[in-house]
Length: 360
Image (cartoon, rainbow, N blue to C red; front, side, top):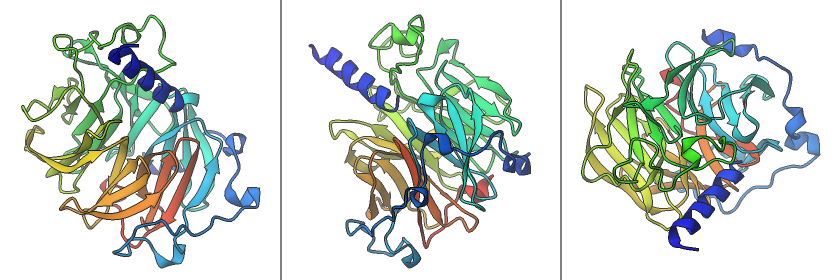
């Protein structure tokens, strides 16, 4: 096969693998026991992992270096979003569901079926769940009762590739979404995104390139492309996105399988545009979702596990995890790192707090 077909086959295989606030405390249906069992239910105990790299003691000693599996048997978990109570809502994208992990009880229950194949998610200041719904290339606002509105489904009248992840600026509520092109096996054959490669259906028709970040200003109904600087390589797949709690800096990673990916930082201007692109951490593979702690460390899922980098781009933590996709700080004390992986979700106790819970 030629290089283009090899790449497409690889991406399709990857895609196939990954084939109001108080009101959120009442979930729609019962537990998630139909998808798997907790560690306790299986009678297994996790063992300390000597391969954890933690020179600055970011992990709590009470966890004894143990990553606890909460539930397994999912299709592909993603998009963990923490509410102001420390609960986590996460997706099982191939099964088109959103689940809730309760910080108070530790139980996992089904919140919603029929999610538009939700991927990355975040809570807004009003307690609504903002979800990247890539079934039809949309951004959804999901209300506590499970109903939703479509916020955007195009850029300048042309299809989005498939919104992947979202970060909401806690200062003004503006939303940043990443829009790579990952062909999905559940797209309808008639969907233009399934017809062409390169993806000439959408906003990148002139070049055949398409990896960009978009901004939805507070109250706006149209997206603005913010990766317009010459340093940005649009022949890439932007994936995870996270920002600082003061709304001044944005971090975006680029997914790659050939060591050409990395994490980039930007300054956020008052109008939401991005400036001053800098390489934060270079030469990384399979990067996915990100979060941040209260020391400014950036946590990125992908490759061998979850890694954290300090504001200078130095690695300060590595937790080996199989098939990691995303992570978020959660729990009643905001000191539990909740990790989504391909078939399971897990957590580990930390000494540092996350910033997302206090932003919604």
